[in-house]
Length: 487
Image (cartoon, rainbow, N blue to C red):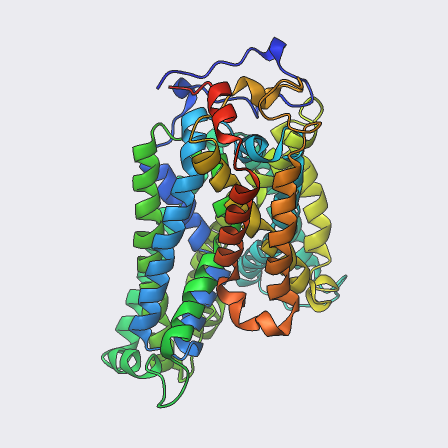
């Protein structure tokens, strides 16, 4: 693959900066292992563990059926990100720039802004949860009890929260090389600790662990089960990855080849997800054998053990896992998305600082206010908006543009540009989005669609893509003639 060269002097300042420009092939340092660790860090959060463990217990399915649904979800997500990652590997541009081909050079600001809002909110929340691990370590070392709270957090909590905020910003400001090193360390380290915890549980529980494996993951007669329960688990796990699926190009652009990306996706999704889920199933069964009750939160398991050394190791692990997913899913994406709004004024680093600044207040008010006002429905609504966008962007690249894009036209406001459409906005794409988004949002707010909530993301994506193709039937030939692929 030859490098795609863009002459900055021929670009519009409102569309171009060095962070959004095509990445030369010589600057791409990632292989399959880096992509594997992107997904490992995305999987290994406290929420991810609790979600997997809870699905084994409450889905109404036998444990191995839940396991099969989770692995199948990994395969589906792998297929989805292979589609969104391939054009960014080919052209070296991030998600908000790729969106210009379908939405228009101005219209792309809309999907970038929506994705950025979702990410910034969760960045603040995940930063708070990472800080609880640091607070756990401080209490384990120095002792003390909780007293004197401000906005629901103690002095130690605030110190830990500020420390985590600063660490994440520092890591981000050091650039993608340092972030890569962190992800490559955190992913294997967290798995190492999880394996050690599983072995400890096995050693402590003895053969009773296998009895519990056979008992607690077998549904009672007449309880749950069936095809819809299986699809519910499948859809829930797909939805868990839905945000990163959309902006996966932000990471794929750093990979040396499409083959490396696909192998990294395979190892990081179905393989890593299967391994992680097995450890969650194994460890959760052991908690019943040891403590007489099911514990789905790793922090609760550590608290029961009452060992300072184990608490410190666990705190470090929880911290690394949560910061890892925060960087992957919630920090890098909005940094690019905000830069796309005003490239001449906002670099990716500036976008990261804006993200961190807004998210600081979200995390700070999480305990006292946000967690109790039903904010989940708001975030679920924004998440539902992402589904049609995925369908539109994929349908545009593969079926309308036939996999051929014009890089210069992505960075120009010239009305003759292939992606100028109507004043920089593709009204047909916006219409397809608006109609299909109504359905996606209805799955959150309309009780009659409640049964579809688990896998509404896939339906919304398919609907959005199909409607976009219907509204754009005559543009493929013109786009192909205008395209200058980087080959």
